[in-house]
Image (tube, each protein chain N blue to C red):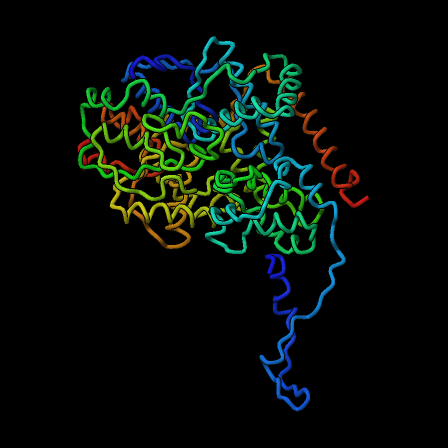
Length: 249
Length: 307
């Protein structure tokens, strides 16, 4: 059975009669189990092209479904539903509705690159995961996931000043995701450090938050980067046939 | 093997100016103790870390290439990056600029708009702090210089993801004897063993700590880190030696988080390999920034007579 057809044996697609007699033969319970017939009509024939157009997804069509990516995957070992091979298969078939079922876990790829290391076809599955997560957000299938909030806060600082200040990234991320800064484990980290009294280190970290680290004469690079980001955003929206507001054209 | 990489351009990266300052400090101190000169890249910028590629991968290539162009401007053909993320990104930029026409075009366009030299592939070699010490000093050189042997210290060497994966961006690795391996890296093992340490057989050398999502998916990171820590303890390690500020801070953060959130306490210590090497070379714990680590290794250092 091709791996996408596991959808057919989900509980909601199985029919079973508690009491059923056919031609005088008792087929109650498991004896009457049927897989409900199903016609798929919701293929998105552009799905592979759309993923290919986004950064990281360029080489998805090379995949020959060997499963090395899933076999190597760090997150799969924690959560068996995290299955890059399966998602690549769905994308190549255009099974958008099946893909969207996993919208809340695809973003969890930790970019360890084990899949990209193992892939014999140079698909760059790690890039495909990021492109797919991006696609789900652009299409409006899901809200911005915490990792994208973090990536955007981080990247914005880099584009603005050329460098990042980690304390600021941390505070912005927690604020944007509605989490308190004073979480027990963060407090324990800081107080543990304070007990050893590296006062100059702490002063330096504090100063970095005020006088943010920056690359000198960054203005022209910032302008070039911002132009490029806008250009890419427009190209991505066009590839996904979205208007400026995000709805389907 | 001596002579190679005696004077290199140094790219610390953002983390080494922040939470990874102890790594910055200890790398410089070790270089000085070994008679190796590092010259910091002038006016460098962030390499893109693990975040910018998720906005656009070619932008990350540009950001990394800008740093390589600075090394070229300064007349260097080698840049040394102690941070795995920086090292990986500079290598990746080198790889993409040599092979991918689109990456090359974007880099040329952004570089000229930003008003600096366009970096061309093949001009500058990026090396990790491990390559730098291994190839310029070597095990023999370290053995001669050890003043405070790490003997009796059991070390789990942890390399993380970005130092070896994906293999194709590190063409100098997997070349057999004398080269580094991407399947089973050993340069840190070699260096610390020469400094007297007893390396334990650690099967998770290149497992992932979840660093990219240390904050955004902290439950996953805590699970991954807890696995690294408990395995190190099961292997008999006193300390996990690290060579990446993201891994290092991730291990420290999630060691505390595992205790606070999951109630799982682990005792294994976490130190940068440069801190261990520095103390073996006779530098004080303060000089290698042990007090700047989030985790507290002072008892272990005293107990093993390294202070």
